[in-house]
Image (tube, rainbow, N blue to C red; front, top):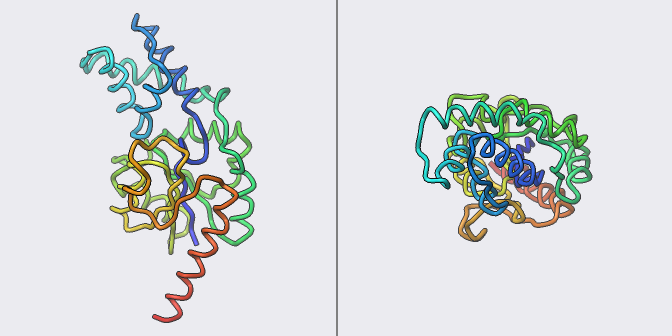
Length: 224
């Protein structure tokens, strides 16, 4: 089975780096810093949305200034890795899932180069057969196109999506792919309100969840 993962808020807690980078670009514009919870609430829909929200928090809606901050943020993003950490148990879970025979991929709204940079920094890059980022397709999540691309890039076939947010839930539903929801990420909605086939808080639980879902799929296919 193909397992596609979201990145920020699912595999990694990158909010501290995104927060620091956000305040750096705000400072360069002469704007006051924002606190971590505020910036965390802006994560998940890609850099242009993040920058719009950063400026919106200062009462600014200026396309020229927005474009300038998007470029400034992008110039810093590949190096924004020092404060990011994987969630506990991620590496072991990825190793176990690969050992079960699953193909692993990434579908994130983070651009591909920063996504690869942070995965490389954390020693996780080699686990993944494909990485689809926010600049890989004309549309970003929650549009289903990036998730379809990620599944195809991993060889196509039955797939599960592992994510943490409303964006991931909407994307998975639109793509017709079942979602396993990581409850320790950046969502704002109660997990029970989001469509999912399983919930987990601890990555040690994930290989067992996937094994059960894969077995159910195999059983349904045999009965078809």
